[in-house]
Length: 160
Length: 419
Image 1: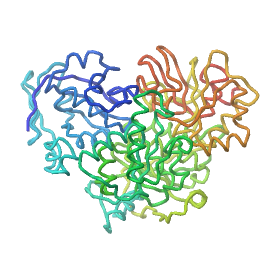
Image 2: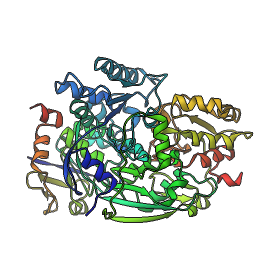
Image 3: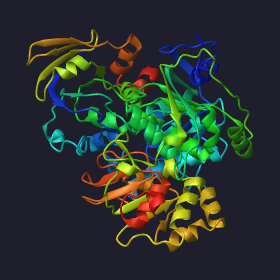
Image 4: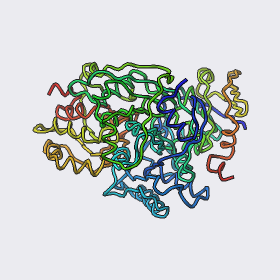
């Protein structure tokens, strides 16, 4: 499985309250959630994001509330993958469970800027920065997690 | 190599003699919890997978507490969905308005969390029950759905940090100040993926309410769980609230902790977390001049009797500063009633504050106290992220009930000793 897209670059400690503010949690419709994704830190995100694009951020991405609406909103916005120096643990779990690929790779984060084009190979954990011509390696997912992501989430995975 | 409290509880629920950090396990669950925000997603996933019954009707708790009493039509629809699901599945611990409370105040009060339990909840502050020697942790809605269906969840066994408490908190210092101090010290990712285990001779000087507040905010340091050593005070609480069998786990003498922190409770000052992260802390002596528009006292962090007693003690005979809105909300109906019997509500209302029904509303900018652009609040809640309590350009300062109540009186962040 591979992903390719332009980078939206954010800082450390991006919390779930800015990924999807609580005022929009009176719904669980992915499309409606996506319309408000990141709006409190990046108003332009939802207008500029295209299918396949990639979020790259610093440490502790997704900290705060356990709302699964956060990875759901990111996935429904078209983002193919999130790369961060580290993830908050509930966000990490939720992303796997809904089938949003995420990778921890501090070097890739440091070597990537807003607008760069990245290509990610989930089988090997290889991240290529096509704009800068650099390559980084992240720890690939264990096989069972890859199967969950390929099934588009835990529920489909246990159903199959 | 010995095991920590957390590791022992995980091992016992997996049927293993021993677990080690990093090990992936599938554990049996004693309780699966959800609220009106996270449960609708879980119910949809549950149905999508084709499940038609829950693993145990007694071991699931559903508490509509976030946008309740229903704040708008969409919230009402979400609550209706989980109400109907709970009835259809015969879930015993569904708590309707009138008997509900803020979930993390309610679950211990109802005796549904006892020492040695393993609990997951689709709410990040599920870690609160660690105060009772429980392993409890927040998960998402899909985990809740799978947990309701199978009674199991997978975990990666965490490594741990040890906090050895000594001494006695001075003056107005409470559990809130202690945990803000710790988060300020280790950072919002200082315990990422790890357990925070609290023990030591100072434990005896912390009430159960102090401990609930501290375990509650373990997630604010990124922790998987926070857990307290069980003592006589814990057992007294358990005997008063529950008939469930329990088991006390203590860490092995050779349990491995990645780091050990010694905390002298007697040196901690009232502590405030400035916007926009809970680790951005200052002692009350370093706060300076910060004027405020609103004060919020309550939540799963500080909505218990100790908190209301302190707030009422400070507000009694004083007036909330003109131009400041002070909103006080109890954790549960029982806490509400107890506050009524003790006369606390009269003291609070006579000061010019409002007293609300239990709800999570203001803490997450849902309803019952949303902030406008440029407004500042002192709040006893747990998060001060950008836009957390309302407008993206509003500000939240996290503090104890004592600091919050004193600030309501003066209109700026204030040391309770100074009024």
